Image (tube, rainbow, N blue to C red; front, side, top):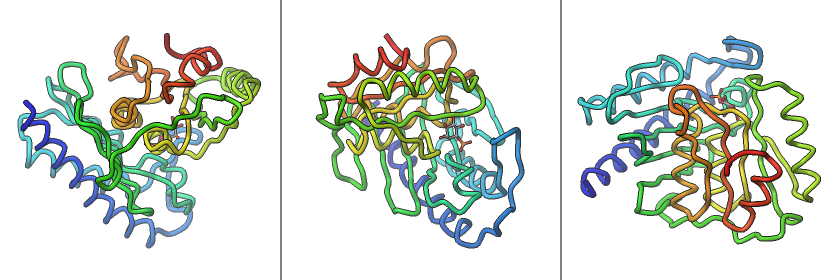
Length: 260
Ligand code: IPD
């Protein structure tokens, strides 16, 4: 199993890196305004489809028995399934904002086993395998040591999948603790930043599995804490997510109302 996990991690990391090279080219050559909307504020670019096909082909070559599920084309869940977001932060990509990532996760028997997130613009590859730690470009990651919430920075993700009033109330509660807040438009990178200790927490009232799984494993393997995202069929339906360092877990659970 250990050797198998290492092989899966190696393929996930290389695939994310290679997709990142293509994403970087597509971002540099994209024509402004060339996107469509799947719904209000739900962006789609041609690059999403092209990258998802590339990633699906690579994973199928390496692991023909495994299931594949991608944000754009869907797919099929099997005992072992790769769950992929070809561009997380599509709105940023479409607008020319260089903050988006490729997220690849392997779920086996209801457990996240491998995660890789590539930020192609900054040439950063975050990766983790269960029990083996999390790394950024090969260097071991640890969540932040912050224990005073008045020094904390927390990303609060937003989408139209939950009422604005619920988001506004969560923002108000988190700000009232003394924490600083941000929203940068890529849940996958937000979670990776918690793993890297760049921010102290990431919370969102609903996020889909393809955006969140790789980042959740990164945070856990970097010594952080997460809610049970896969409970109540989170794999298919999505769920709230809360990922924090150890010191702020209780305070952020109370302020966001997520976890516990
Ligand atoms: C979105 C981003 C955003 C998060 C949303 C996601 P997409 O994914 O991760 O930061 O707040 O929940 O839907 O549409 O860019 O792949």
